[in-house]
Image (cartoon, rainbow, N blue to C red; front, side):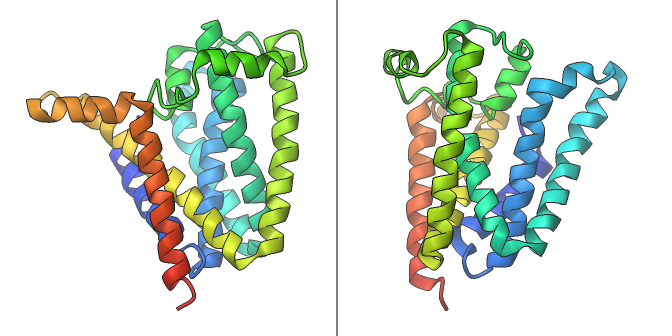
Amino acid sequence: MLDTVTLLTFLAMGILLCFYGFRMFRFSMALAGFFMGFQAANLIDSLFLLENIPEKMRSNWEFFFPIILGLLLAALSYALYKKALFFITVFFTWYSIVKIFLLYIIKTQNNLKLVVSLSPDKVAKLTDGSDTAQNLISDSQMNSFMSVIPGSSDGQKLLAICLIALVIAVIVGLIICAIQAPAIKIATAVIGADILRDVFLGTMGMLYGWKSLPSFLETVVDQGLHNGWVSFFVWAALIGSGVTVQFKFGDD
């Protein structure tokens, strides 16, 4: 789960991106760069690096590596903010697509025999603390789609998914850069809403483990954390609100 400081930081970042992304475009690119770097570091840790880090250094590595990579990408995005729009959009689109299929392979195969075998803690980190947040598509529907993906093994299929997602992401990035202002408002609203969705799930996770939580709130928190439709509608409502605010007041 995300800790309180991270939740508050992401809350501020999400609000600024979702509702003020175009008005504060250069700063927004820095925030988006930090978020992408933070998420990328967690993904890299989970898939490749953490098992190779000495156990006594893992806690410090897990804490500092995402922050350092996030700050580096934030500084780069601020300096190259116009070009950063393309790369941030490409990474966000690629990451979102690959994550859905990666989680499906983990869930259906119980472990992932690709680069490493993921532990339950790593799976929880990839799912942002919600074990069913990605279950909006049924297993049968996803299985039908997976069957047409090239490759005979999970590894080959995931590689194909990565390449397909990259092509889609580049197309989306080019469209965003071509349309400019309207697309920037939509893109920053979507990225901001995704950050705020993570904050929502993280908050529900913290409340779920709170022993003194009033009984009448237990069902609400349980649904918020474990019902994928709840997080989906929260995310969709935030996107709609962010886009509305940015198109109505974004040019003021």
